[in-house]
Length: 195
Image: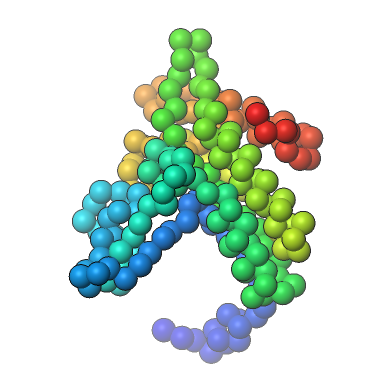
């Protein structure tokens, strides 16, 4: 229901636009007219996260590294998205409000969690944000998804996105290698050389 004043309130200019990016979504028109909305890495249920897309074919990018969600790792997609939004909305500040990846993280015999794939993912995507800023996008911030392993809507506790490993049985928290790396990025106000 619309109330008096609602339309003027929602017509107010926004202060910043949040952008969530994990992986590119590649789609096409299927040859037979029926789509496959389950070939997108978003779970195995009968319910698609893409309402109204039953006539769309989803494709996975070829030749790219993959996450535990089977998403392709493509930082260039984040750069392109930021630049497209900046061109279409000149003067609008942008913020990357979610960016991260799930990997098969395990605790080693010394109680540590090494996640070099996540570090490479973050390095590439933060470099893409830096390139977008250098190319004129007004990006004001970046938020890693996620600080800690948590409940993921399509997979429950089976996928680990966090920079901090959670032992769900004991609630023990173990900062992963990526957490230590990310804290160094913050402390130095920039990216270290790529490993």
